[in-house]
Length: 114
Image (cartoon, rainbow, N blue to C red; front, side, top):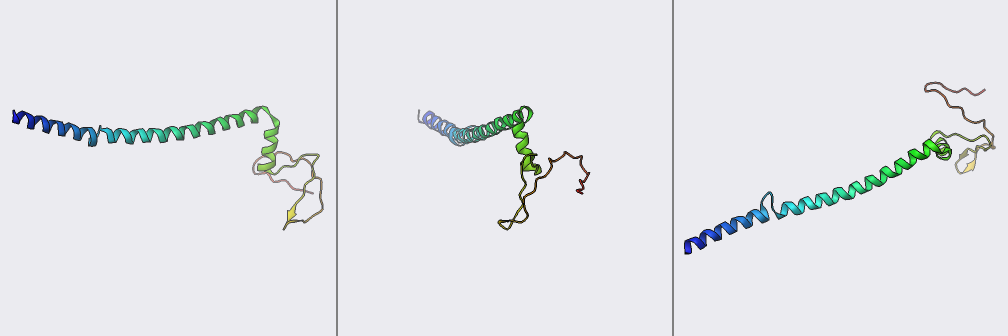
């Protein structure tokens, strides 16, 4: 009888080892749950970013205000009814001038002012 109790105790300890420390054990499951939670949080941020980009694309395709804003910020264009001021060292360097509206140019072509 003592022999069977010893064998059952050894089997129980072996199963406990596999449960707590084995490759498919609780430690591995908690590590995988943490990784899944981190990935879910990252996916949420990326989904929000995708929604913002979709809204920006829709606005660029349909509305002119976003296109105008892009032209101002990225290309430095000025509207026809606007006055361009160039500021150097915190003070106006030149008197204001009214510039003609910018014309789109092909790449590699330089515009020469006369």
